[in-house]
Length: 454
Image (cartoon, rainbow, N blue to C red; front, side, top):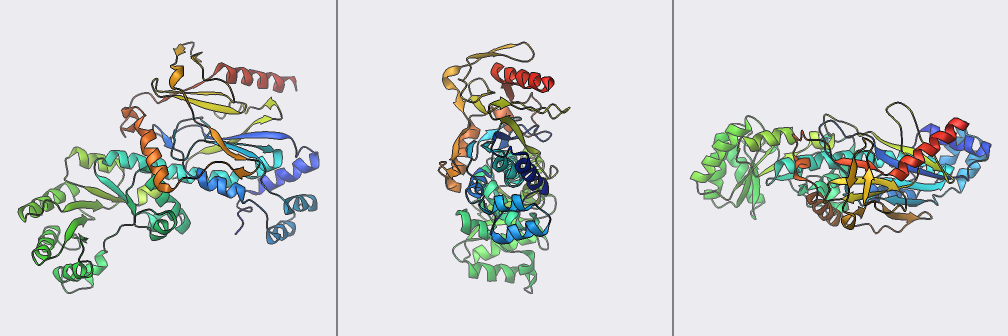
């Protein structure tokens, strides 16, 4: 299946106009970045990079795509151009699973004007959603620690494929498993699940349902105990253990979780079942989990669905894709609230200083810089790390894709270097510091001067 038509019409009409103006072969650089983080968020986790690169490598228009464009009024010249179109540009990107901040390029595309322009919508649709979910999931995982998170989001995701990608993003962020079987098959993510209330209701009594379930899974399982009365459900769970069942956990999906989990913990402990874990689910998010942890509710794990796969209340990430250079000349946008920094870039991370510096591409990591407010910032040059690396050259990937397990481990390690306050969901301290080098500021002045001359 081709994804070439997964785009906005204006990408194609601009391509047509570039052709007619004879500028299609100009050398263009575009940045994909997020201007501002969602309210209350202190970082993002870059996600969707691998899929974006794969889509670029396989980007093409099929004969039926060209026929559709002709029938919808696109010019013969453009359709002929697109018949043999392949992405032949270069891409530099952060590693998937990297924590990133405002205005930092997650991905930079270099190519002729048409090829770099025409992939904008596809790249944004891939990276915006997956970065949003991965970042939301990271907040949930951090709020829950040391309790664990399992993705329950498929039924509330905006479509089956979105659910698969959300499961992958959540696992990268630290979820230990998913209920999504297709995500497990496709990516090797551990799959996990219990039973629904309907299973209990299908039997004359809850106890009979528990006996049937444990008979089907004698090696050890989890029982959902809140279909009727939670306390009685816990006692029935203890009863099947006395009858020989191997019980690993019980799950609660409703009610006052503080009161209910304390009551269930006491019932289990009185029966000598201290090893049986208590899991909860039901419209969980980082704020509810944080409140439960502060209340010292005895919860060992959470199933999280709706709020994670939709990132409620955010719903969307405002990543943008902006032209920053044409041929060797920097380009800027000066719109109020939407101004951009010009030129190809590198981002240098200084973990000892808790600061990132956006620099010009191939500019050395600065030892110190003069900030916009006039402050001079001295940096520990020896520990600076470049975030953007070569991912594609002449349309072919040079970035070695990692398994989702490797990406998750990388993400966990990289997050460990961030200051602890950034992982507090009630973070009221100043945001992580992102500065811009003098060279980038100079390029902006040059671009502004060129614009005024014209």
